[in-house]
Length: 164
Image (cartoon, rainbow, N blue to C red; front, side):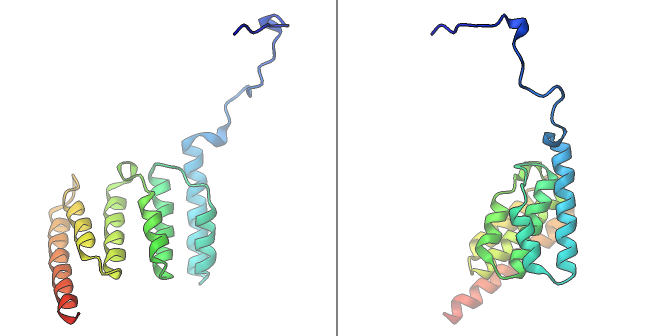
């Protein structure tokens, strides 16, 4: 297809901004998200759990990065506190685990394990602690803690199975 140019190239106007939009950089977006997290924490500390959940669930959260992981972890923790199991699991599933910090990864897996435990899905809960044990750079004490938690989950699963 042939496109006719009515104006010479040097006379055409470029509609793009002269400088890149500072608000669109991942660093600035992450900083804004950190502020939202701090606001949600303040709301939570004042006893406004539902408002904190609402603020975080409506916030534009990046796909990756530790600020995004922080926001989704916070949202999941507040939803867990409100006993909203499925939304909390959904929030955790949206986290880009490779871009999270080591401590965030551990927290993600532990929270998922707790949510699965509450659903009596013990195999899934145990898998989360196996994921923790497989994390590179994890201290030996954390691996030992994961082992003992796996054993406790296995015992709890057996007790629930005997009661049914």
